[in-house]
Length: 185
Image (cartoon, rainbow, N blue to C red; front, side, top):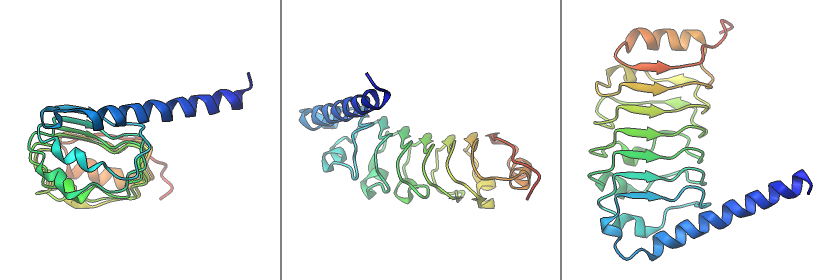
């Protein structure tokens, strides 16, 4: 079997698995009781409205889709602690999540995010932010004022040594994972 055919079969298999996950979720009779939902790799461009019924969500995986925005009802998930949005099409931190009362872990790796702005009063419980392999070129200094944030992954971004140097100095309370850039900036 050729490599091309194997790749096509693997992609087709992923699409079928994603559709099965979505169908299972949509058919679930007690959405309001769900605490963990995995809709990763479902080829979603937008979220199904039924997701708003999942008011007891603690963990939600929406990775490997085509999402670029999050509906405003997300801030009304009072128990949501972890949200995986890796490998989507977000260009910034989703503003509709800024008031999420319990969100502790936000995973946005491999999204085309170019600027990181994290105001001190946004994401009040956020302790971990994963921005690995995004396209970040600029970080707003307001991140230094975020008191709850304990760890941020900035590896494989477009940040030079000077960008990271001031961040390490102004945010000693944050464990910053980074790939130090060259001294060419």
